[in-house]
Image (tube, rainbow, N blue to C red; front, side, top):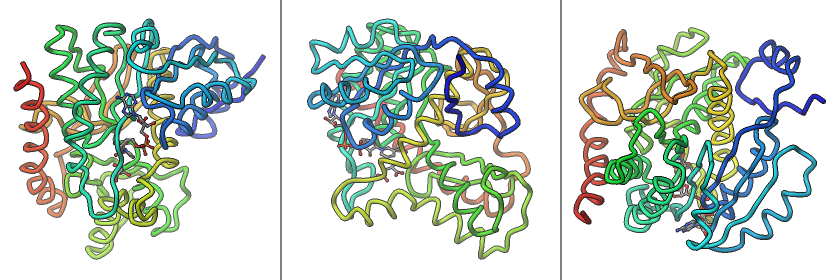
Length: 341
Ligand code: NAD
Ligand code: LMR
């Protein structure tokens, strides 16, 4: 029977084609940090995917109830809960995609880098377990500061001898989701038509929307470019301030992460037309990691799409300006793992 389709980022014509071809639910997805603000709605959205056969939810507490609750939804995947380090290995065995939103979120007045001291260790420990139990999985890092935690994950995987740079992703989809929303609003465009590539990293000025490369092609005044760029860069802070101490983006983040998971599953499933922006190991610039548009395939990143050709003067300047901060954040992540040997 046809399952309800959950493919938020493809256009209606494509969605119709997909629905004509019922596919088996065959992919196994784990969420580490599944009882959290992002983890819970993300688990719900992934539970809706017709491509998922097994959904494993891991957290250090409170995950039993989340799994019991979700398991009553009559969608194909089987939901299992795993609590604490002693159950982590079983959670991870056989997984195709591991999503990591574990860690603390910001409060007003904090930068993402202020989370480093707590989240670096959480990400390191979790990725060590991924390396030991499902080294071939796609790894989606959501925990902040993404500009450092992805480098931490890469170093851990290298130390374990299982690093595949094509399968390690910093999730920057929320920047694209925000850019699409804000630009469509400002220019009164149909949301479904709008696709803004966002490159660089995932913090402040390292987030660089390329408005000159968006679809559809739109003309902006200099003031509009400045206003939209700053709003997209501060989207996270806008939510942190509105939540006034109760955390950062969780619902829009879950939506964005679910989109990235669904894209990864479609790529694993052989769809040859899957493109997303993500923070990955890259040779696009002199920095070792850089977010850009990539083509996803069965083996992860299949192609990296160039970011610097034909940038506007504003974008080229912003690109140069972001490099020192992004470089320092990446190096901080690398040093964190290397100094522990
Ligand atoms: P939250 O505090 O609501 O949830 C975090 C969850 O992680 C909790 O359930 C907690 O128990 C769990 N956790 C803590 N230590 C763990 C460990 N060692 N192993 C497994 N689970 C552990 O926070 P949240 O709002 O869900 O945010 C989580 C992270 O995502 C934060 O670091 C936040 O900054 C980041 N974030 C990133 C983006 C992005 O665009 N990449 C967007 C929003 C939030
Ligand atoms: C976001 O962009 O919403 C996240 O990175 C969370 C934050 O701290 O802003």
